[in-house]
Image 1 (cartoon, rainbow, N blue to C red):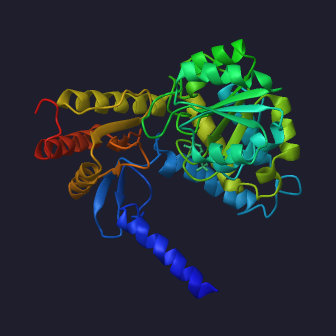
Image 2 (cartoon, rainbow, N blue to C red):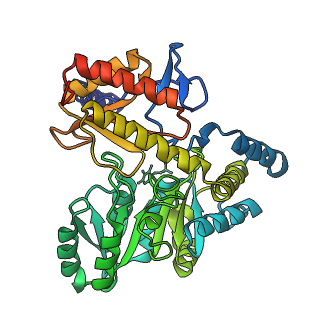
Image 3 (cartoon, helix red, strand yellow):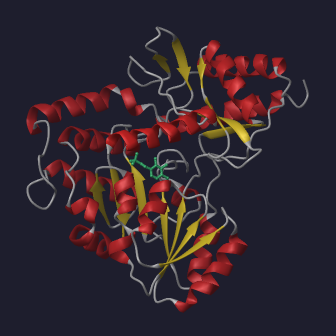
Length: 398
Ligand SMILES: *Cc1c(COP(=O)(O)O)cnc(C)c1O
């Protein structure tokens, strides 16, 4: 059997390679940070990590994790409801709820699991999920596991959302679900309008704050802070794997009855190991740091504004953004790859994205800003962008 199957896989892999869509992994031999070392020995400035607050290699988090290794051991060897709950898990859940001004939190091994395990227990065949067309893969998969009726609206398009909400009046309960920040454009979901429409058409709201927590809003509380809606959406999901330290872990936070019910019925919670104590301890430290001072959030916002305004002034076509994601539009797939390769030669690590990751004709370079970046890092990147932009003729006013 396997020989036939191998031929089958080899064929598909060949097609992927011929289409130029084969994903190669670059190997990093240093900690994650503003500057990283590749296995080739090359040192590059990193503008493609989700390390928005620079916490991936933060000394205080590392110390907190080390202390937990000493006093709580390495792993839990259990799901939460058998013997996988430590005091650290409970404390982190409380702190995340306080951070988002919600009632309770349930931890998962990843946000992929939080989204995978949220819809199926909460909604049934007679209910409706109304989902943004650009929502993350984990939301799409989570919705697939649920028997509720599915409605889809065009990305951040409020006319279309209203249309779908009208159609969904036939169902018993309705849940509108959106990413807080969409990862390819960096645009923020129009949550104020979403909540208004949800109120008008009797629906609940869920926001995935994975790319927005720690980033969006003056204090980094995410999209609910930006629109002054803290405590007003029923469900928030998020990750510990991006701005919140970058290790591993996810969560759902929101109304306490919803969280209570998820602890009873959510399958990735009931049937998967709990996060290691050291990750919970570092998470607690992370929330404490972000509550005690606004230093990192402020630095991230300053960096993002600086980078985006300089790049715009140089004549780059930048998608409007309120996040730390900056899409430098090039429109041409080949150009995006050539541009990124040139940048890497100059020590700037970014990724060029093109169809099918983004729509046809919308190829781009995605730059992710971080509080780990110093001004000299930003200036070096801007200079490289300018040089290569001139060379490849993409500046609007060269
Ligand atoms: C990254 C991301 C996830 C997955 O988070 P993990 O904790 O890495 O599984 C889920 N949703 C969105 C919107 C994301 O950007």
